[in-house]
Length: 424
Image 1 (cartoon, rainbow, N blue to C red):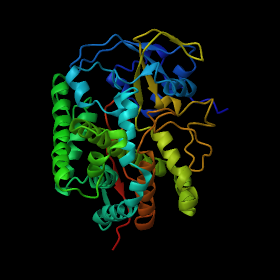
Image 2 (cartoon, rainbow, N blue to C red):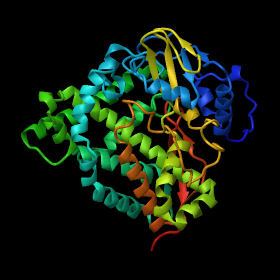
Image 3 (cartoon, rainbow, N blue to C red):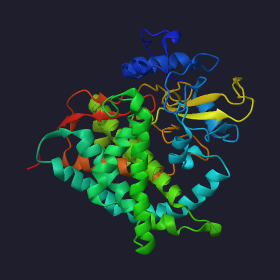
Image 4 (cartoon, helix red, strand yellow):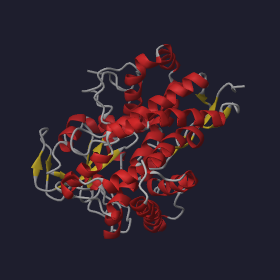
């Protein structure tokens, strides 16, 4: 299945995930590098170079094939999340701040997800359906008369940030603060957000603590004055007599902001780049927006793969179905970006196809207990945002190259100039 892709001038030994310069290479070179790795019989191993308050780790393997990533995701009892989801080793204080569902194993993960799921339900999200549509209209209203803007800051970032904050009951005046703090946490490898590498640990911890304090203060208010928001639902959720602690609510908010805000804004940003670069696919979607909405959104998420990888740590010696052997304590990266381009799964994976169906991508994580809890909300936001753009500014296009985030963890876009015919 699939077609042979052109190879960039990059030998397997030149590929180093720990070298941040690798993540500044053009996307086609990175894509070709991953294709080379998928052809190798064994997962490559890399040394570590970054110390983020926990020392330099022992190194890690990278799973690049779709089947291997799926298998690891289905077996959290072997591929554990509890030691962290990033490459770098973390100090104990890091673990405490970011100790939410995404970094837990059962039974703690099951307990927290059960409580959160009672509040964060499709029914509750449906209550905000009108809010998503109104927010998208307001986002476009802000720029419609101008004819150009920074697509990331003024369109792609505004919708998910607004919805997450509205869901939680965060005041509008605090939304810029939430946006800034989340940029520091997820952009720590980028000198624009953290100027000196030795300040990464302090900057990330401070930003996470500030976000946690914001929602912890709100939780105290909601305990006395309940409202119809997610914070109230979280502090009220009580399955089997269990409640979330204030720290667990704070950690969940940090996770929600990072996973629900940043990744959705990057998917929307990449979506405009893809539709600009592939005008025939744009015209195809525009010809029947609702008919193609489901498959177009899934294809944007597949190609964008906003989260490049998740780390797991082996709880015991293990051999995968493909014959790869790991030892207890080994660190393994599940490379979603590469898996979503696996030629054995996707026909012509380099092709952007708004009608691709089936599309078993793992842009929201692979099957298993850590599949994204907010995937349905992300899909809705992406759909509603592009529906509003197609309706109000149908000729919107990227007018320059995206300014990409320097990161091995996120396929992020910091800025993206766009142009469209002003609405008078």
